[in-house]
Image 1 (cartoon, rainbow, N blue to C red):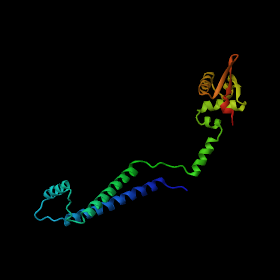
Image 2: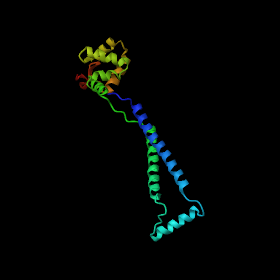
Image 3: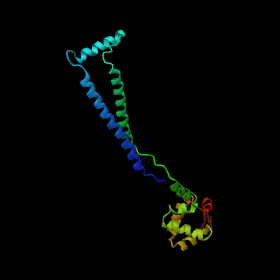
Length: 192
């Protein structure tokens, strides 16, 4: 089953955005109701605050408004939902989704891993290096450098440099034989 990662992430962002907006709406309604329901005649909010603090210090609590506790709990819940909504939107908007591999792409990865090593090496070589390896493959992986030069159509210096690079990377081995080198494909590449 192939699922578009961008669509899933958009749904998550939308969920947290809706959660945040609904929470903000109810928080605004709750604050408006609380503002309209508080008595304003003859008392200031600082006087009420100090009276309440004095009551808390003495261990007595004024219970003039039975909805005060409900207001406090509702306020805490709504503020928490707004924070969760903002956090969710920020997280899913700015941090990328971890992509999972589906079955078809996993099978193609396994197919690539099971390909012979020579195919993998060929993908990393330049044109001259491929020519040299093709000549070696056509002669069962072992051939003299002077004949490789002729069959690959390269100059003496170019052949020497190509073989030196291949030997340095462990793709071929060189063994001195008279006035030339015997070139052999490395054992790990022969396994197929």
